[in-house]
Length: 432
Image (tube, rainbow, N blue to C red; front, side, top):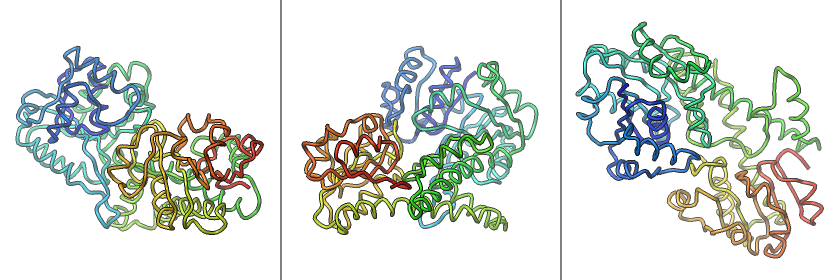
């Protein structure tokens, strides 16, 4: 089939390359001329394992290309995927739908009757029904098909998803979408065909549940710190209950990135607009628990520096909000680094992939080309993003370069007994 993808950010670029991998002819569009040029040259403008190979293979096969022309995609496409961002509004919790509305309006000017428009962006419930009025007036149909990508696993999640959700208004739209995803569905992937509002809610409900589970164990970490309990052992014991399970039950610095924080806030804002804010009032505390973990990380660093960070040297390992990504949106690691620097410490940051993005967004911080350099003369080392190279690092690597052997494990991912046996003072969130 001939598909177009509107927006070539993280979601759009991944979806375009994956649809071409399934054998479709795909044309992506973006208003950013330089980004389009890079993609057509086979360069992915962000870090995502496996995506460069997927992009280059399908460009070479002639199934994939990118443009800045809406008339071109209108003429080309049978199915148009909307993959633009829905960031948090400045100074508000609500989602900013400027890019979604703009994409739809630009598409309407070139849309052929009989086409299918597919929304993949994360939007408040009610958005699809509103957009469907103009799309159907143009003789096309709308489907809402939320994405469930995990950064670092986006290619896998697109080609081998754990479910496909379609919010449709008629059987024809569902039939066309089943043809688009035929190869995936033939592998046994569950298909949920539902209405617009349910499809919209699936994504925000899933993210809210995950955020709740993460913040629950981090709330338990707060209790553990005051009782002498060990949150890692507590989580392990809980995980054996099949009703609870162990996924996302890992205490630490909390969640960040471009999805969970802004999605739960947008969910709260939409619920308030609908007059049902009491139903998701608990999400306010989920958000608060998550942010408190960042403050507690600063407290632990301060404690290891005899009560004051002024004049201290702090080595920060990690800038991305999670490993296997260069995404620094709402990064807990950088939030902590900035807070510590504001208390008068000299901070140096190292991350395997996110250095360029971090420098652009936080030029006030100092950056180092390696773990060793970031930790040179450090009074305390902070492990804030659980990259494999940090988790597997032996303490002896840093012994000769640090000023004092103090480490705070913000992700509960290091071997506590090993670090202590090597003479380090080891602290972590939720354990002694």
